[in-house]
Image 1 (cartoon, rainbow, N blue to C red):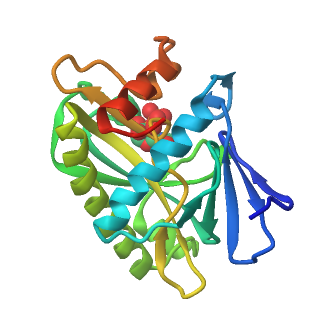
Image 2 (image 1 turned 180 degrees about the vertical axis):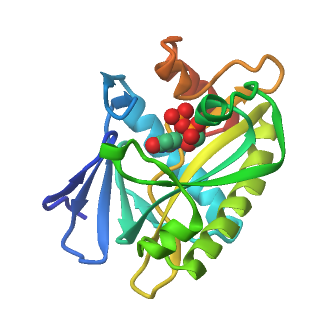
Length: 237
Ligand code: UDP
C-alpha cells in the first residue's frame, strides 16, 4: 500500500491517505515535542521505536479483546491503519500521581491512586488541551454519552492489561492517554498510538523515569530509555 496525499501532520506522526478510502498510513517521525510544541527536537531512531512499540502494544490489546485501528506494519516507521472518525477527547487513566495532576492539585508525585482516576481532556492545542467533563463532551457534541461510556470502559480495560504487562517487565504504568475514533460501522475503536511519548513508566524498584518526562524535564537518555522499555517487554527493534 502506497502513501498518496498528506492528510494531517501531527507533532510526532504524519497521516497519509492511500488508494483505499478505508485505510490510512501512520508515519512515525523522530520529532519529539513537549509543552504544546514549544520544545521540539529530533531524536534519532524514535520514530522506528515508537512504531514497533505501538504495534506490539496494540497486538496485546487486540488479543485481550480491545478493537484497535491497526491493519499491518508496512516498514520500520509506517503502519497501515483503518480510517477512523477521531473523537477529539483524550482519555487519561492514572495509577500514580504525576504531571498535570500534581500541578493542578498540589499532591505528591508518586502517590498511588486507588482506585485509578479517569479524566477527559479536549484535544485543542490553542487552548492547551483543557480538562473537560462528560457533560461538556455531550453538550458540545464531541461524543455521545454512550460513546463516552464505552471509551471509559475500554480505557480501564487497557489499564488492566497494560499494568500487568509492564509489571511483569519490572515497570510501573504511572498514567497514559488514549484516543478513540469511530469506524465505518459506528464502532468505537482505539486509535492514535500507545508509546512512551503518551504514557509514564517508572522502574518498579528505583522509580527511574523511562518515558517522555526524560525529554520534558531535560533528563537526557530519552531514546535509550524507550529502547530499555522495548527490550524489557521483548519488542524486536
Ligand atoms: N499526554 C499525552 N498527550 C497530551 C497530554 C498528556 O500523551 O497532550 C499523556 C502524558 O504523557 C501522560 C498522561 O497523558 O502520560 C497524563 O498527562 P498529564 O495530564 O499529566 O499532562 P502533562 O504533565 O503530560 O502535561
